[in-house]
Length: 468
Image (cartoon, rainbow, N blue to C red; front, side, top):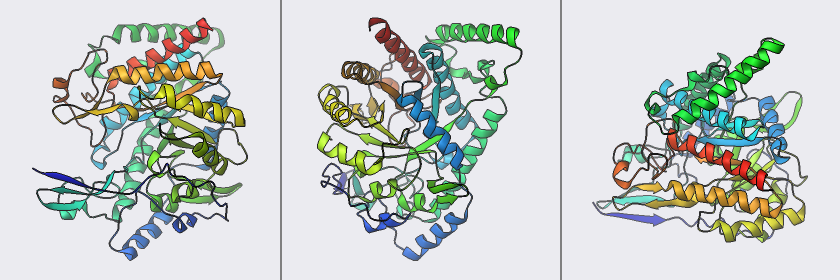
């Protein structure tokens, strides 16, 4: 089978010197160049789907959005830590109770490790309930002489290589909302029902990891937390706050017609809120200063994030910060750096220094996944756990040396028994990848690797404090 790719011109690093701050509206982005958008063949059908979507209930509330913004402001002050994780790209087929509950389990277990080790609250942000769109490096794909649109995620088209499946379908916008609502409903029901009760972390166990090399260490930690909670309740009586946790959602706000339709005004809270998610972010490919995504993001009241890659310079980053957070609002802006293990040492320090000199208030978060993707000899995209850990270690060290702090991590992970990333506690090899490689797009950490990374974050953070 022969393959060729038709490239898309999409250089988000070529920012103009400034962006004009004209009056904003949820649709003002349509006056700018919008990269990474599908080419719909029926504008009227797209308009009808958008109008339908605009009448559907929101997926999150404005008070939840503002609560997360307060939490991120606390993380900017070093009073909490952000854990953001989930699938690289959700699929409609994975909107099932086992997949959702396992994804929630691994994030809860990681947060328990971080709370116990860091001795501070953890903001739990799931990369789900809306992560249905994916940026692509090409508009089209050719196989055996047939050229079709690229697969852009379930919210746009189907993965099967047929003309019918690859047609961008506006009705998938409605389906994405429905699957996101089902996911949110189930997550809220689990949390409200006590699934996240710190007194019963045994509820979070995943059967397939009973043999994990980290299982014994994790159980010791759980036992220590249980003893502490029992002691507190012996002295003070039952503490109901341990039975529930705050949990938030995030996704890359890539498909702007979808985001516009779910951008709403609410009573007693001025401004506009994106109510498709608590925490939308702009990807590296769409962060052009004069582009449609930055125009859309500057007008919403949500806390927002921007992915920052190794090609970004201070002269590009500082104007972006000015447009997205002109009033230096606490909790408003997160910068998620994704440099790669080999590049972070030279690429990150100049950006930190520039932001620090300007006195801008941001939350620095490390994404050690996206800069460390490679291909194996058998054609799998993968990431080496040692490179993921290496970039994270360097991120802590670089921020410490600069007098700033790393306030969170952004990870692609799953609670399923997958073999997609090399290394980790079980030292997965290239031959192991064939056993359970299930990702639609990018390789994810499995449960064991995710929990191991949480423990390594604690050790690194505690070690840095002790050495300081």
